[in-house]
Amino acid sequence: MKLSRFNIVSLTLGFAFLYLPILVLVIYSFNASKLVTVWAGFSTRWYVKLFHDEAFLQAALVTLKVALASASIATVLGTMAAWVLVHISRFPGRTLFSGMIFAPLVIPDVILGLSLLLLFIAMNVDRGVTTIIIAHATFSMCYVAVVVSSRLITFDRALEEAALDLGATPFQAFSLVTLPVIAPAVVSGWLLSFTLSLDDLVIASFVSGPAATTLPMRVFSQIRLGVSPEINALSTILITLVTIGVITTSIFSKRSALARTDETGG
Amino acid sequence: MSDTASGRTGNPGERLRRALLIAVPYLWLGLFFLAPFVIVLKISLSDSVLAIPPYTPTLDLSRGWEGVVAMFRAFDLENYVWLTEDDLYWRAYLSSLQIAALSTLLTLLAGYPIAYAMSRAPERWRPILLMLVILPFWTSFLIRVYAWMGILGQNGFLNQLLMGLGLIDSPLVILGTPVAVYIGIVYAYLPFMVLPIFSSLDRLDRSLIEAALDLGCSRLQAFWLVTWPLSRPGIIAGCLLVFIPAVGEFVIPSLLGGSRTLMIGKVLWDEFFANRDWPLASAVAVVLLLILVLPILLFQRHAERQQRRADE
Image (cartoon, rainbow over the protein chains, first blue to last red):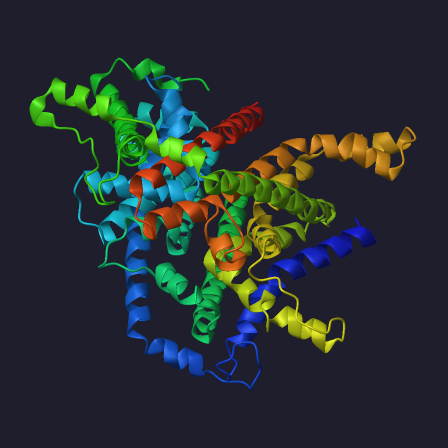
């Protein structure tokens, strides 16, 4: 099948629009000038400066901690929720349950952040890393539930039944039969949660206390005042990490998909 | 879905496990998602006391039921009356809806041709094209919006390019205007539009278009009478996925919109962090949620219907 000229033009323009701004950002991170918009030769001084910025390193550490913890909690809760959504068709309050899974996906961040903060204040909880982890786990588990349930739907339950009939405990049946099949979805749910947590500015700003500043909060307070070359350097590092991560996982998942088709085919 | 395990529900151990499996995520969402909304509703009906908690009325549990009654008696709609009287809030809601609607339309216009071309691309290209659309989505939202600050500014990349080419004499003012917000929303939300449209175009049965062409339709007619209607589920999902979050958007208007762009997400943020009027911020949130209830319900129904269709 050959692409028509119209389609080639749409793809070229579309991807140029998606990638040129990021490319400009990356190029200017190597600019020697402090004026971000004037090119004054190649330099890596902003990277050096970034790695000596204590506040940034501290914020990066907090962000990483929050993302690891919240993604792990969200994956467990989200997988449970997905199992309930797919396999238990009737229980009291099921409509409310599925509503609570869908709603956080689309409700604006400002509302989620404000409401959680008011809850933490009402409960008289000290705000900081823990409250950010709880907040992130709450909205991330809904994404995990959606991703995992779309995989669970295609899973043949008879396999699990067979394991149970052959004497496996329900836990064994789940971990030895179901989990390996839905594992790719669980892993991508975890990665999605991790990224959402790394990314979040609004909710973290609401529920965090004076002791905890995440990287997006630090970045936001700086770029509010205008473009800064240090932030360009930081962005370039993050973009590189994300690109490597996405390409690696996609190669990995393609390979495991191939291995699966080989198994069933051969 | 059939409940294949129903034969085992008699077993008390199994029943307990099920109850636990339901209870844990249910309680978590109830505590950290539902309960906060009840609190927001309560505070939006309260008066602010010098903008610091506690708000009157508070629930005095030591007085038992009488305390509960006293709390409800003292609730009033003062904050909501305030919202309707000060036209800042009216204008902010209306302008958020208008900005979100127009940028959803622009995102559709930009996203449809991309999704269409992707679905027409040779089979072996498609995974790569798909990854190229998804990749920006994994990159920080904040960074993607920030990238435009350097491009659209007074001395930004775009102005330098246009002036260098001799197309304009003085720099264009884009950053700090609604135009920058439109660009930001289209850019940030484009993958959410392209992906659902692509997935419905990808499923489309090609022979239908061939049949339309054989029966004498022009290519344009075939597109308009066959392809467009069959891709409607993707268009609806894409539009809702862009429109709903765009209405409450905070990052884009605050970084690109300047003081001239009025959006409700920013108003809520300022009311909370700058003016420290928590009851009023809560009332703003409740009204915003009421505005979004309809599109959110539409989205949920649409998603469930699509899932059911996929099951069959």
